[in-house]
Length: 484
Ligand code: 5AD
Ligand code: SF4
Image 1 (cartoon, helix red, strand yellow):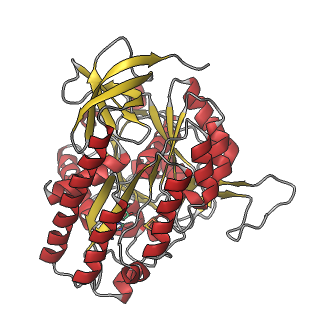
Image 2: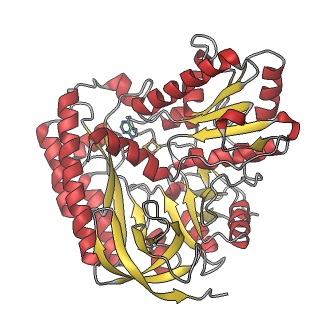
Image 3: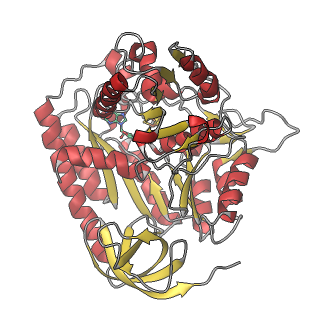
C-alpha cells in the first residue's frame, strides 16, 4: 500500500466516515456545514456542535455551497493533517471574496494550537473555537455577525458536554460514538493532544447511559465508548482510586462498560482507545462476561523497543505490553487486537526499529494504524529531542511495517475462512451496493455478503468463504431475531 495513502486512510478509518450533515431547510438563513477531520472524538464533537447551534435555529446541510456558516473541526496530530485543513481553509477564503457574508470558523485542535494566528496573521477564518468552547459558539457567531473576529480557546477542567444530546450527522443510524472522557493527562512525548484538548475529565455515567439508551430506542445497534484513554475513566474517584464524595457512587471503566452492556443484549459495545499501562484484568473480565461487548481491543504500542517507549514517555516496557497481550488471550480466548505504531521517532536506531518488527511477528496484530513520526510544536519530544531520523529512513521503515502488517492481516483473515461470524449489518457495500451488503464482525473486521431478506441494523450469521487482507467475503446463513 502507498505510504501516504496508508496514513490518510489510517486517519479516516480510525474515525469512520467523512462528516455527514443533514439536508437543511432555509430556516432563518442559518445554514451550517460542518466538516470533521482526525479522531473519532472530533466527529462526536461535531454532533455536539450541531446540537448547540440547532437550539439557536441553525440547520445542518450536506451541501457546502448552500451554507452561510462553515465550521471545520480540525486535527493537529500530524503535520499532514494540518496541511490538509489549511488547503481547505484557503479554498473557503477564496470563496469569501465573492461571498463576503459567508462565515468560516475553525474548531478543535488546530483552533487550540494556533489560537489567534488563523484569524490575525493568516486571516484565513472569522472564528476560532477550541474543544471546550463550543457552548460559546452562538455568541461567537453573533460577534462575527457584527463584523468582528471571534475567538474562544479556553480549556476547561470540567466541560464534558454531558447534558447535550448530540445531533447525529452520520446518516447510517446503526453505529454511534459516545464520548466518556475528554482530554488526556498522559503526556506521551510525541503527542500534541494534552495541549490541544487539555486535562482529562470523565463524564457523568448516568448521562452516558441516557445517551446510549436513547440511541438504542432510535434503532442504533452499536455504540463505541470514546476517550483518549478509556481505561482511566473514573467517576467520583481520584487518580489514585480514592473516593471523592463518600455519599455518592463511584464508577470505573469496567463498571461503566458493564452498565452499558446491561442496557440490551442487542446493543453492541465497542470502546477506544485502551492504554497498555492502564488496561486492567477487571476490564478484560467484563469483555469476556458479556456477549454484546465486542471481542476487540485497540491497544497502541507505538514501538517495540523499551528505550524508545521510555523516550516516548509511554509508561510501560516491551515486556509489560507483551504481558497485557498474554492477559487478553488468557481471559478472552477469541479476541482481535489492533495497534498503532510510529516509525522514526527521535534517535530511533536500526536495532530499535528491528524490535518493532520482532514484536509485530510475536503479537501478530489483526490490523494496525502506522505512521511516520511527525514532530509537533510544544510537545515534550520537540523540546527534549531532535527529530533526527532522516525522512527516507522513516519512510523505508514505514513501508517495511506496512508490508509486514498486510501479511499478518491476510493471515488472520485466512484463518477465518470456513468459520461463521455474527455480523451487524451496516448497509449496502461501497463497491457493489446493488448486490452486496456489508457489516462488521465482533472482531471489527469488515464482512461483505450478498443482499438478502435482511436490512441494516439486523444481526446475521455470515459464513466466510474467502478474504482479502482487509475484508471477509461470505454468505448469510441465518438471520438472528431481536432478543427483546
Ligand atoms: N507523529 C506520528 N504519529 C503520531 N500519533 C500521535 N502523535 C503522533 C506524531 N506526533 C499517532 C499515535 C497515536 C495515534 C492516534 O496517532 O500512534 O496512537
Ligand atoms: Fe496522546 Fe498519549 Fe494521550 Fe494518546 S495517551 S492522546 S498518544 S498523550
